[in-house]
Length: 217
Image (tube, rainbow, N blue to C red; front, side):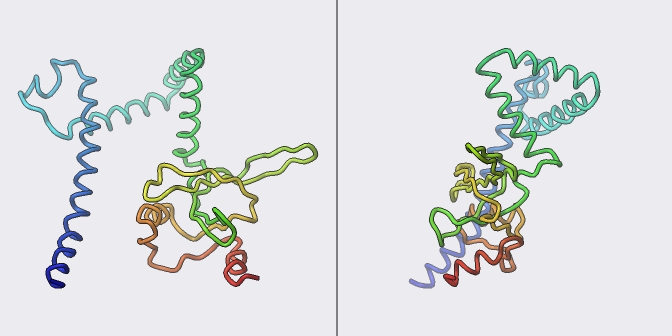
């Protein structure tokens, strides 16, 4: 019975990752294939060839992104984008949604942005308990009656779904910066702590705070 269980687990270890990978890739390809609907009906693959071509939407989507980027990078393109954004800014609900998403994508995707560039560790949800998070903003100004304080914003994802989580505001000295890549951080969270880096996780900043917490000093 133990031998049968061992073979069953070994088979699952082979097929489950493969099946999950195929499922996710197929989901993405099917979603991007919907861009084919942007073409006039007479120019769609089914009309020209008599059958659909899986994955053609991926090529079309990438081509649209590249062409859009090329247009937006020149002077005329920037003027057109400015006019388009000016039009959207006149629509109350659309303005709020568009500006919020634009600011988030600009911060995260541009090379100069500092969001999601560092993996950190904070004492959360209570003292002596540590959570992994991502630094999203290093300069959040908090004003009180007599002073102005700069705090750090950290996004602490939930596991195994890292798309949801909590925004925690802390003082700089309470944030432990880790010598860990963003990819390793997401792997650690997504796997519920099962997948760890090949080397010990070391603290880059405020390492003494972790040591003091463990020893109770």
